[in-house]
Every structure is written in structure tokens, then in C-alpha cells.
Length: 626
Ligand SMILES: *[C@@H]1O[C@H](CO)[C@@H](O)[C@H](O)[C@H]1NC(C)=O
Ligand SMILES: *[C@@H]1O[C@H](CO)[C@@H](O)[C@H](O)[C@H]1NC(C)=O
Ligand SMILES: *[C@@H]1O[C@H](CO)[C@@H](O)[C@H](O)[C@H]1NC(C)=O
Ligand SMILES: *[C@@H]1O[C@H](CO)[C@@H](O)[C@H](O)[C@H]1NC(C)=O
Ligand SMILES: *[C@@H]1O[C@H](CO)[C@@H](O)[C@H](O)[C@H]1NC(C)=O
Ligand SMILES: *[C@@H]1O[C@H](CO)[C@@H](O)[C@H](O)[C@H]1NC(C)=O
Ligand SMILES: *[C@@H]1O[C@H](CO)[C@@H](O)[C@H](O)[C@H]1NC(C)=O
Ligand SMILES: *[C@@H]1O[C@H](CO)[C@@H](O)[C@H](O)[C@H]1NC(C)=O
Image (cartoon, rainbow, N blue to C red; front, side, top):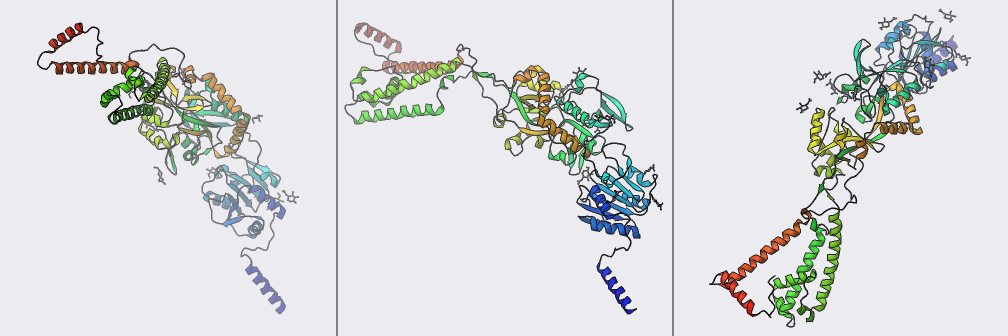
């Protein structure tokens, strides 16, 4: 007796040290089979929420087995959202289904294993799949095991399987078996060219559905890609228009998105959406976006530079620095000559007058006057060098001037944001107000200014008016070297536009899909990308659809075109004005000199005297006033 009691208490003490839920019975599932069940059911989750509905011997035994086999951490009777694995264990199907209904938000990536310790019949409430949402479900019972069909084919059904390996989520090519998917899109050339909608009732709600009876409706880059995806995944589709007034909708706060196809995605009204959807963080937080199929740059079309004729054309052969240098060389030389004339007694006396020095030196520089007196004097070498420099400068000036005047002059091009900003251009869009951070690189302070120049375009008439006014830039995207405007534009509107070289932004184009479609769609897009099929379709659509003027926007027209210009008055204007002002000053000086000489008598008398004298001294050379 004593030995027996001691043995009993020792064994109890050992049991106490162990887990409190140790059971005496054996589980009805073989250990190796249970390992297989766990492996197949929790293929991707790395922790588990465990819910036991009762503590019968069977349940405890299976739970013990779970503790031994499950390789990761688990939580008991509490649900942690980050844990995507769920294990429900019990002996009553009603209790289990109650427990499942309490679990919040059954998501597509949840892996749920239900083990029932009894035989369940085919009319059990466990097979009512309305409780499971879009989660993955495996049910194991004594009478058999079932798997809920993949979450992308509706309606989902339970199928009986005969090996535990069949529980695994299959990684084979998805086949929708001609099921109809709901898709959302809009007309957005060159992505899609959808046009007509009709009213149709889908799930009891009126919806605008695009008719696909025109060949044109099947055109577009993204439409072609979508058709390939549909064919590969074997589904049929209905393309709907976004509900309400928004195309994509707007982010209100971190948890709420208002309107547009993003909201429809979130409400699971649609399975897929496309039409220039951008891979942005804002949208990515709300819906699943596929791999991008292309990188698109945002550019402006800006007005072409106009031809100009400048009044100051004559000054253009030399840069400002050269003009300043010439002027300072002249003044320095004048100063030197002037000072030397005062110091050096052998130096010509006439140079003691600064004005005479100045005019003479200009004369030498332009090689237009070489008085004999200069040659004999001590400044011979100085004048020779001065004249040589003058000859070089004038040759350079004349040849450059000739080349410039013969070709046309244009305003400078607008190619950077800085020039865009200086030109004071406006821009606009006819769609909902753009999220500026998506369109432009907001780290660039010049991009910030673009916000202030935005115009909301109400209708095409207004757009035409803005284009006619001239200081309007057209926003568009560049795909494979072709420009596509964001708004509809007639061919003629683009005649005076060229592409601004610097892109103002860029984005990646994607498809928005429900999470369970992400993997297969990604795979197809990556394949299409690596085989070049995407580029092929892109070029094909753009080649067929681009208008003549859209191809022209990358061609510059402000270059020398080979024709010779006839010189007008304007480019020579500065020269004529110089002549006019010079003559005016000379005449005025002459008149004042006469007045001075005449003193008491009138100017006319003086002139008469001069002409008399002139008659007497015909042999003498006349003095040149000029
Ligand atoms: C399935 O469950 C839902 C609600 O839980 C219930 O409305 C529906 O009648 C059930 N269907 C069947 C076939 O029992
Ligand atoms: C459960 O089903 C098995 C066969 O599937 C059968 O042998 C067993 O007797 C059943 N047990 C009960 C309690 O119905
Ligand atoms: C359970 O495991 C045994 C031994 O590995 C195996 O023969 C049997 O087929 C398994 N049962 C099921 C239903 O897979
Ligand atoms: C697409 O699904 C239908 C219906 O299940 C089937 O008949 C057809 O063979 C499938 N096509 C492909 C290519 O798998
Ligand atoms: C839509 O179709 C109408 C009539 O077929 C046509 O006149 C119109 O240009 C089309 N719109 C677009 C954007 O293609
Ligand atoms: C769409 O805009 C119209 C007019 O601005 C407005 O009456 C209507 O309520 C808007 N619809 C929605 C769903 O916001
Ligand atoms: C987000 O906006 C919605 C609707 O305006 C509001 O109901 C919700 O409380 C907001 N959430 C947060 C976190 O601000
Ligand atoms: C277009 O908009 C302008 C100004 O916003 C307005 O004056 C004009 O009536 C509109 N035209 C049409 C056809 O709606």
C-alpha cells in the first residue's frame, strides 16, 4: 500500500509539473497524419490562434498532439490579427461555428483548420460557407475531411478529399472556368478606348456597363493586356464604369477612401480595375496593386518659341563681357595717350584734349582714319598694335553678324521647370483635381509653384481659349517616346506646341486587383514584360492611334532652316539710331560753334562771310568739321 501511495503521489507531482491540460487518452489521428495536416493547412502562416470549444478527453488529446507538432508560437483563446493561422477544435459543430462567427473579418490570406472529434454529416452547419468569407478552410472529422474550394471561384463549395496532402492550397495555374469577373475601367487613351455604356442590373444594383460591340472598344494597351490575362486565367468579364463622380476617388484619411474604383475595390464590388492606375503609396495602402507593366513619364507640352527680331541685333555677335572689355580697353588707352601727351613734350600736342584722343583712337580702331601726323610720331607702334587689334575685332564682329542676321532669331526654348516658371505658363486638367504629390516631384521647390498655376478645365471650349491665348502648357505622359495628352485635344490645338525636355514626374502603371488575384496577375504581367509583348502592344496601339501633330511635338522648328533672310529695318535699328544721334549732336555742335563765333552778328551773316573767304582761299584745304 505504502509503495503504491508513494508511486501515485510522485506520478501526480510529475504530472503537475507538466502542462495542466495533459490528457490521458490518445488522439484519434495518427501522429504522422496530424503532422501532415498541420503542414498542409498552415503553409504560409507562422503563428496560430487556437480556439477550443470544449475540454473533453478527445479534444485534450488532439490539443496535446497540436502542442507537440506545431513548430511555431500559438495563442490560446485570444485572436491576434497578425497571426493568419486559426485552429478550431471541438466535439460539437454548432459550438465551433459559433466560435468562428465571433472571429472578426475573415480575410483572403487566413488559413483556418477545423478539427471535429466526431462524425459529421453532409448537412452539418459547418458546410454553410456563408460564415467563412474569403478565408481558406480545411475541415477534418472522424468521418472524413473537406476543403473549401479556392477563394477566387464563386460560389465556393466544399469538396471531400481523401488524403491529407490534398488540403494544401494549390499553387497551380488558376483557372476560373469561365466564371464572370466584375471589372472596372474608364476611357483613357491609349490605355482603353471604351465609349458606350448601358444600364444593367448586377447583384440587384443598377450599374453602368460598357458595351463591347464596337471593334474600337477592344483597343488600347491595357485592354490588350487585360484580354491576355482573362484568356490565361479563363474568365469572362463585365466592364463597369466607376460609380459616382470620381474615377479613382480620394484618400480622406488613413483608413477611409472616398469614391471611385478604389472604393469599389474595397467594397469587393469588383475584382479588378484598370485604366492608368498609378502605383502610389496612397492607393497601395487601400487596394492590392499588381506589378507595374510600364514606367511612364509626365511631361508638359509648351508653346514653341516665336521668331523675334531684336532692335539690338547688332550687339549680338559679342557677349556682354566682350563689349565691356572693349570699352575698358578703349578708355584705358585714351587715358594713357592723354597722360603721355601731357608728360612727353615730343608727343603730339593735340592729344592734350581728351575728346580728341577718344575720337582719334576710335577712328584708328575702326581703321577709318589714319592721319599722316600720327605716323611720324613716337606712338607709331602703339597705334599699329591698336589698329591690328581693331582689324581682328572688326573681322570677327562682321562675320558673326552676317551669319546671325542671315538666319532667323527665336525666343529661347522652354525646356526646364525653371524656364517654365519664368515664362509664367498656366496648365490645367479636365479631370478631378490631381493629387499634386503624385504628379510632381515635390522635393523640387519649382514643382511646388506649379500648384499655383493650375486651372481646372470645365469644358473643351475653355481649353481651346486657353490654348489660343498662348501661355498655356498641356500636361501629358510620354510612353515609348510618344506623347499622349491627359485631356482630349484636337489635332489643330497642338500645332504650336513642342515637348518640354525635362520630365516633371513619373509613375508606374499597374492593375488594381483583389488580393487573391495578385499572384496570378503578377505572374502574367512579369511574363509579358520579359517577353516584350507589352512593348509590342504599346507601340502597335500608339502607331495606329497617334495623330500627326502628336508625332510632331518632338520635332524642333526653331533651327536654321537653310533659307536666307532679307534684312529688315529692325535688326539694323540700333545702327541707324546711332547714326541719327551722331548727326544730331554734330549739327548741334556746329550750330553752337557758329553762334559762338558770330557773337554780335547773326549766324546768317557769319555764313555769308565764310563763303566769301572760301571763295578767296580756294587753293587751301577746307577744315573738316566732322
Ligand atoms: C447559412 O448561414 C446563414 C447565416 O449564418 C443563414 O442565413 C443561412 O440560412 C444558412 N444557410 C443554410 C443552407 O443553412
Ligand atoms: C463514424 O464513422 C465511422 C466510419 O466512417 C464508423 O466506423 C463509426 O462507427 C462512426 N461512429 C459514429 C459514432 O457514428
Ligand atoms: C495516415 O498515416 C498513415 C501512415 O503514414 C497512412 O497510411 C494513411 O494513409 C494516412 N491517412 C490518411 C487519411 O492520409
Ligand atoms: C475554361 O473553362 C471552361 C469551363 O470550365 C473549360 O471548358 C475550358 O476548357 C477552360 N479553358 C481552358 C483553356 O482551361
Ligand atoms: C464614341 O462614339 C461616338 C459614336 O460612335 C463617336 O462619335 C465618338 O467620337 C466616340 N468617342 C470617343 C472618345 O472615341
Ligand atoms: C455627383 O455630382 C452631382 C453634381 O455635382 C451631385 O448632385 C451628386 O450628388 C454627386 N454624386 C455623388 C455620388 O457624389
Ligand atoms: C476617417 O474619415 C471617416 C469619414 O470622414 C471618419 O468616419 C473616420 O472616423 C476617420 N478616421 C480617422 C482615423 O480619422
Ligand atoms: C465652358 O466653360 C465656360 C467658362 O467656364 C462657359 O462660359 C461656357 O459656357 C462653357 N461652355 C459649354 C459649352 O458648356
